[in-house]
Image (cartoon, rainbow, N blue to C red):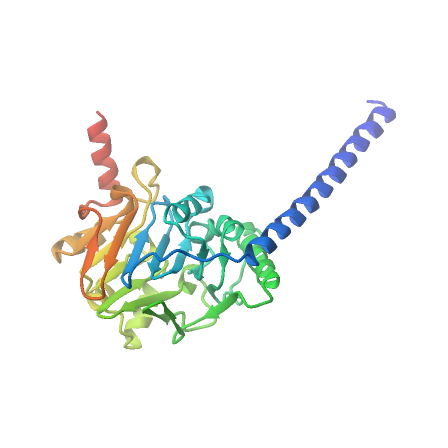
Length: 331
């Protein structure tokens, strides 16, 4: 290859990178302008309920996304996975949500925070509530963590530094007629990102809902040893019903009437969530189960005394058993 050919090749490569860099900065500017318009928009929600509390466990595949509606207030707890990033946005539109008074991201794993990009670019978010994960030993290779961290900080600057709120055990706020109490995290540092997960109890009159993110058995033990009241009528299975979580002692302390499980379905359920041990316990205790892999999006309603669901309860098959039953039907 002659020197002229090599020089021409390098010239084309250099030109390509220059154009790519310019295009990247243009995209950043457009994204920033979009975030500015959304965060400064003057929109109001319709009245969703006449005092009652509604909660939707969205079918977002392998991930978590819960929408709580009461009066004209809307709260999103986790935003679904990165690969299904627009599903949460579509569900919010279907429910008539115009702005989110609160968005709670339990921790920065992509199956809980991946859909946040779409949410921030499409909805005014008044408060973004997250745990303080600044002490977590993030690897440079964890691109998702760095990207979502940059995006939320950028949005926070646009909103005048008032959007992001870091919470820990003991913090609380009112959501319409309900109260939200945070039970964990307690410490500033955990080796496992799952254990930074915000554990929150939503209380409306006599009804308690416990949302647990991806906490593992270490945090369950910590909550029990500190004599924290984790009892609840409705329990969101920690870590999608994984073997890392939902210990028997913790489940006995929660003592729920209903358990919600968010996991992928069929061939897409690579982890086998929920596991057999967990489901066997729920069956033995005759606890009603609602699960996205079987029933899709699940709607729960309460007037503060009674609880209703929009579908029949699910079965007690583990994720792998449910997959086998699907395969049997397909034969």
